[in-house]
Image (tube, rainbow, N blue to C red):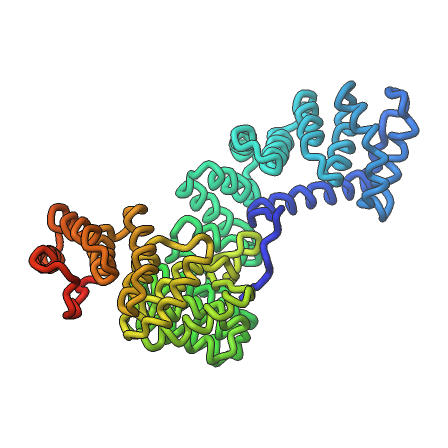
Length: 484
């Protein structure tokens, strides 16, 4: 499994292949010039010495040296502005391609097309080169125009591959897959490009084809790493049994990223809604010494909370919250495809710390650990401005702890934000009642009676209103705070 980080200037696999095609064109043209002894017209331009230097440069072993190629820029500019023979233009194209100056190369190629008087194959190759150049320039409309023209006259496997890139860029996925298929059927060494091409099928959601191609790679002597890629495709099709089999084969073959594979399976189990198996996968990855085990704690807490395993949710949640409160770095693992390599990649992303603290606090509430719940929910409210729902939960915990002033403040924040308004109104009413604010308590309970939808809260609010109206003092009997 590749763990190469994506670069800010990354290119898709097909663009990288297109660039390689251009490089091959440049090298082959140099060989042709050297072997055929083609010479430049000697007197047409004032910069004769520069042109001779360009010729000598391409004849030498160091023709790709950046500094020397840069010196030929004046020669290229002179041809763009004034024109020249086909041989002159072709030489300048090679210099421009070597310098990655695709815009100049495109202009020069257009001039070559204008004066070309050879057969259709030669003209078609010029069209294709111009199409490749526009792919590199990310001009999809121009690239499609010239690639179509070139394929009509001189179709090559590489041309279909380049056009597939353009089709992908313009969201014509089905047509792109057809062109990739043509490339795989016609290119002599197509299998060598499989690792770069498979993620095209994955991007298109054609996981069945991706699996069949990964199977070719798995059968190679060095194909162990692709078992995890294939497992990823199986998970996208919901074929978890096959994915687990590939994971186990990978482990038996001595794969070095077994823990990362379990992270992938855990995330996929979550996506399939099986939080029990997801939790097992994450805990197993932690036990297998996953490189950053704390990054999995969030998932363990989430799965445990969904499964009402509040003890485990509190265990892992408290550990991570302690790190948060200490200001330590905390991230969450994520699984996906590295766009620059086409390989499966487990990376770290910013954690939703508010949700972590909230779930941990709620788990403590369900266990009756109100003091610890308050600590967790306070952490939630201190991270990324927290979430208002935590105010409602913390208010409930503070109410249970008989900290009425603090509970009233939290319930008020939740009410003002429109979060759990009915329950927050009821909770604040109870807190006000025990805090001696009879008028405020009746106001909250009356709101619940008139606007609420929960029958139990309606009944209790009505009862408490009647009790306070019948007596001048706060009732001594502790009232059950249902729903909080």
